[in-house]
Every structure is written in C-alpha cells, then in structure tokens.
Image (cartoon, rainbow, N blue to C red; front, side, top):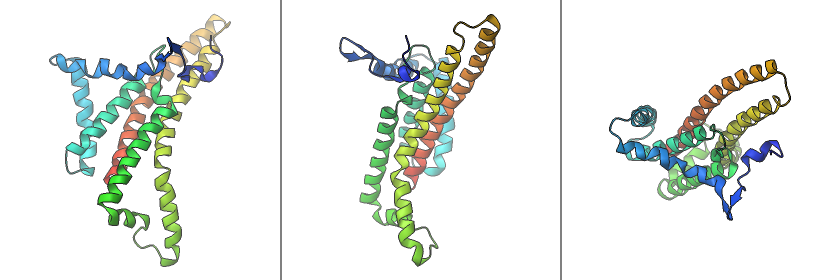
Amino acid sequence: MMTNLFSSFDPMASLVSIQINWISTFLVTTIFFPMFWIFCSKANLMFSELTSYVTKEFIPLFKSYKNIIMFNVLFMFILINNLLGLMPYIFTSTAHIAVTLSMAMTLWLLFMIYGWVNNTNNMFTHLVPLGTPIILMPFMVLIESISNIIRPITLSVRLAANLTAGHLLLILMGESMVNSNFMIIISVSIAQFALITLETAVAVIQSYVFATLSTLYASEI
C-alpha cells in the first residue's frame, strides 16, 4: 500500500538485501542489444530513424562522427529509461536526482577537465563576452562562472522534475478514483490516457533536451 506520493520513487525496496528497484535501469540492455540480432526488425528500424535524426541535429556542432556516438548513446539510454518508467511497476530511475545528477556531473567534469587542459585560452575567453566594458569585466567573470557551475544542476533537475511531476499527477488522478462512482472513474480514466500520451511526449522531449544541451556545452570547448 502506498504510504505517500513519493513512495513510487523510493529506490529502497529490497529483496535479499539487494535494491531491486535499480535493476530497472539495466532493462535497457534487454531492449537495446537484442534488436541488432534480428534482420530489419521494427525496433532496429525505429532506432535507425531516431539516431539518424539526432545525428543530423548534432552534426553542425561537431566536425567528427566519433564525438556524436557518445551523445547518441546518451539520448537512447535516457529515452528508453523514460519510456520504461511509464510501464506499471517499473521504477523510473531517470526521475531520481541521484541518476540524473550523476550523469550531468560526470559529463560536466569531463568537459571542464578537457577544456581547461587542452583549450585554456578558449575557456578564459568564454568568461568575458566580446565587447564587454572594462568596468563590467569582473562582474561578467563572476556571472559566467556561476552559470557554468550550475549547468549540471539545471540539467539534472530539469529531467528529474519533469518526469516526477507527470508521475505524481498520474498517482493523484488514480487515487481520486477510489470509492468514486462509475462516471467519475470513466472520466478520470480518459484523462489518464491523455496524460500518459503527454508523458510519452515529455519522455522523448526531455531525453532530446538533455542530450542536446550536453552537446552544446561540449561544442563550446
């Protein structure tokens, strides 16, 4: 029985001292890898269409396809986990701040270390936009530094908050049907189906936004 609204996001459900909720994160492998063993499967065709579209979006930012592979994998990983979270009794790992912040912080640290080691002058020039008056330069350096530091936080909170909000709304609508009459149950069920459709679009959009913003941050370096 649900004790509170956030119990569906609790990763502490355990079986034989193993946190089984986190296993849902690795369900990606059951969907992602087998489709390469089936010739012209529907999943393979859908994956090809998605990756080709995402690659076209990322090409203007990079000169090499090698840099795009990582962001394609990142996009597909977040997308499949977001969609799996819409299934009943599956823990939404990408709605947990521990997962999203870990991904965002890892990418941000990699970008920063690579940028400051290999493109030090370029990193300094980003702190002071072109045409900034001399008197405002110290303030611009402070503002740009803060905006750069909070990037992993905004990336992770944006993804987790959008997924959590939709799931909480579905839970609230489901609880409103308890001990209700037939007409209310039908009306709420129709509204839930519409909301699930919207949540599917949010799952796709948020995975695309996360991958695109990560690409933009990498292209600056």
